[in-house]
Image (cartoon, rainbow, N blue to C red):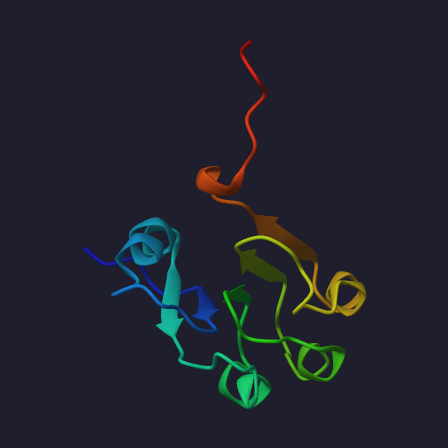
Length: 112
């Protein structure tokens, strides 16, 4: 049985085959996962105006985009760095601004 939709989570852009992992995590809590192909960020505000959350890979998200997001509470950046996200605007406009690193890119302490 599918859970009723409570949240809209937009994935700004992605370069993997599908959003199965995101859906498997988010749909059980009532999120509708909507994939976009907005790698530059141009038009993202119009496409995701009603987003509760945005998962960002390559799309640039400046203050002007963030200010147009009516319901956004979380912007989560896939990958390393936040140079493509206006963090100050995100922290002001959204409730949370998150970044995640993959374990492949993390430096582990030396065991020697």
